[in-house]
Length: 320
Length: 188
Image 1 (cartoon, one colour):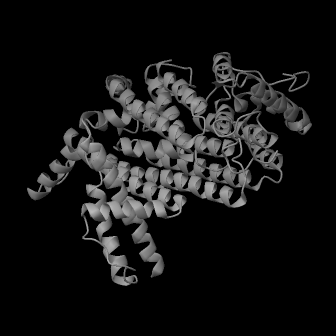
Image 2 (cartoon, rainbow over the protein chains, first blue to last red):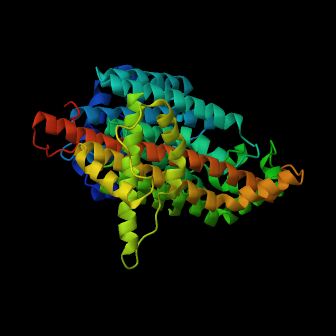
Image 3 (cartoon, rainbow over the protein chains, first blue to last red):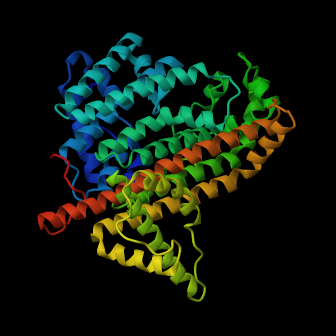
């Protein structure tokens, strides 16, 4: 690939375009995509091809969308440059987590094409991840509040990944799932909310939106959906505590299968069936989280409409 | 201790005014019930504390709980700075709302709580059965919801008092309310 050469803007995932239009952020998202392309084009030539591979096709931009929606929920009018920079860096840091996830999970493809490490090798992928973090902080300039929020995010994401791996195959409950998901995806969306609304009053809303997103991803995986990135079978094999898993392993027989370090295909099939049987209950949990997020939006946003639309859109993801 | 007495006074006046309004509403056809019962019980120790350590009341008060006392309290609320009266009312309503949220959480989880207490009384400990895992998850959810209710109500109270504070500041500055409801703009 010819990196960012000749590309005016990062490409958008087809399904996300409709959501962005519905929320009224088409112009802002076009600005963001142009900024990403400009940023890639201005990076060190040694890194440019790999960065172009990672950034210039098929992203969902759900995190920047959350930043924009949270800003619009408290202040009307166009998105200022400071907020736009925060949205850009969120997308950058999100991609750092994707690059590392793909290396750790040995994933060959993402967004329908080869992952960064598959295409360029582990060393390049790891170095690109570090380069993106350093660039992200440089892009924030003198915005110390945003710098603090991103430091918090990176630390919490690291802790969440280590915790999730340490707790795999253990018989835990829904409350444990909430804690892990809240620190993993929840922390990312918490920070998105804080970047959009600098008063931090929407922090809890962001955390709940992230929890909802994580749970919908879990449920979508069990349904066999691939819209959110897939990974259901890998989670099953690794004994990762998803929401349907947390509900299913209340049954000691399922918990025994879940705890096996090397489950046989028959064990995996039995677990998949047990998890699928818990989908209605999992959907009930997700409805409750969505309702809680709605309460936060109505209480703490001046204009909750964009936030409620975001919750509704996220909630629909489990059915895809 | 003057501060404690002032806080106690504001609480008492806000709660009494609220009770009067509820009583008026209840007297009407299809009227409401008084939600401040738990609030009064909850505030009583704080009021006693303030009375014990605060200065004596400035004048003789009518018997507590009497219609005369309630009417007088309502008049005094009107005499106070409108902002302070509003703050006292907001605080009293917040406490009542939190009490109701707690009651709802306890009602929702009472089956698990009762079951745990029965098991404990019978000397049974949690075992690896489906029932026990559901029970433990539900109890943990109950504890989380109690904490979340406290956090939500505290943030809501803070936001409402911030608005009163903001209106006070604007009044002091003689400014018209800005079209933007927030006190500042993010730097461009």
